Amino acid sequence: MSRGGKLVNMIIGLEVHCQLDTKSKLFCGCSTDYRDDGPNTHSCPICSGLPGSLPSINKKAVEYAIRVAKSLKCEICEESEFSRKNYFYPDLPKGFQITQYDHPLALKGILTIDDDEGLEKIVRITRIHLEEDPGRLVHKGGVDRPKYTLVDYNRSGIPLIEIVTEPDLRSPQEARRYLQKLRATLEYLSVFDSEKEGSLRVDANISIEGSERVEVKNITSYKGVEKALTFEYTRQKNALRRGQKIIRETRHFVEGRGVTTSSRSKEMEQDYRYFPEPDLLPLRVKEWSEKISLPELPDARRERFIEQYSCSPIHAKTLTGDLKVAEFYEKVAKINPVLCATWVADTLLGELYYRNMSVQAVPHERFIELIAILDAGKITEKSAVEVLRNLLDQIKDSGICESPNECIVRLNLGKTGGDAITKAVGEVISEQKTAIKDLKNGKKGAMNFLVGQVMKKIRGRGDPQEINLLLEQALSPGDE
Ligand code: ZN
Ligand code: MN
Image (cartoon, rainbow, N blue to C red; front, side, top):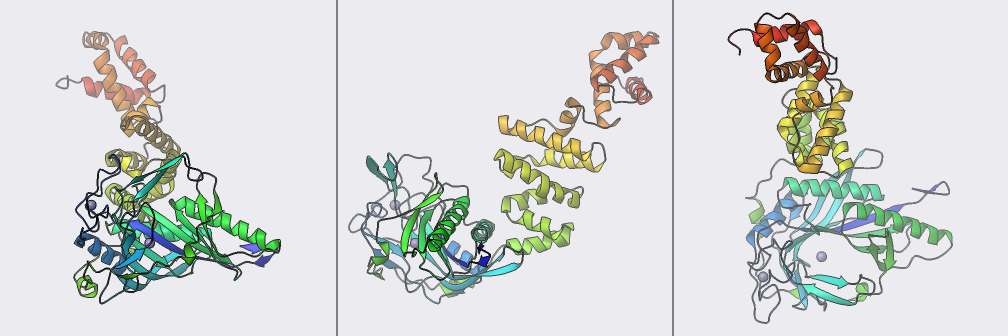
């Protein structure tokens, strides 16, 4: 980033809250599958904070958090302890959040990303801790001036991990790549579902040129983080240019308008009066972590793709950057893995993105068939793209699609000969019963008529002699 030719340093640190994809909440048995149900249908005395209720720890949530800490190469703490963070807010019925303070689960990790020059860069992780999600406030009539506010405790007590980085990021794009890599890692670990609404929330600290740092709170989308940081950078840079001072403050990102606005709450001056949670015992996580093994992670899978499928490094990176894409590729890379890599990474992903579709919507067999047809040289690359677009449009409309072959025939995209003609021959034979009877009765002209019918179906793009031969073969005795 430059200002009047001079480089302006942008310093960004992120605090990411991710919902762990467990079946029940962090301290009670309530189901975490609350999104499609009515408000306050997933709550109990524990997660709605009734006096006298006692929390008990969800073992799976701790195990998931340890998996994350191990995958980010953190130092797992010997003992981890829960604390109460005291503050009053309607989304927090107990009057405190159970979180971790001076004894978090893990410290000092790393995540490797690409910097803006495409070089490998290490982002240091400061700490990872477990905590409970507060409830959800629904402001009727907009956040700025709501008419009234409703509170839903379905989300109250959902397990979160908070992952805090050192201020190592230098641009909004780096921040986006960090989040993408983090998301991929969490999905590879099977502890996180990025498609669930609100499953990831980010607080971003940003400062430039050594001025005060500003915190942008509660950004709820990956694109939002990049947008909010870009907006903040421009705002701060312009303020400095006008000789103004950047004040240390908390701001909110208004997703719809792509801007950040100053928040009047003085959260930095709050005293949370942390103290150890008396109702939960410390966890011996280090010992526990030694028994937990990790699956293959994005970097390892990328290396394997290069080795096993001869993918180019850039394709391997794209294909392994998202677990669902990596899984799709491995299922379809049957015939020509290199061609397939190009087609998934360069063509399919672009077409899916354009249609706002997920790779999971694409049937493997159809894609394999299309690659096979292309690999056999039966259609041109250009036609194959047309077929793919057609099939994706069909899936987008109805959830299903015809086979690539059917599509090729329908759009008349096949090269001369091949399956398109065979198919047309079959169709003509079943449609033209009279002409076939005539042919068997010795009428020579009937053959010309049949060839003509096949030609019509493939819009004149076949070889008459070949069609003649195919018809003769298909009509030879015993095949009727
Ligand atoms: Zn509950
Ligand atoms: Mn937190």
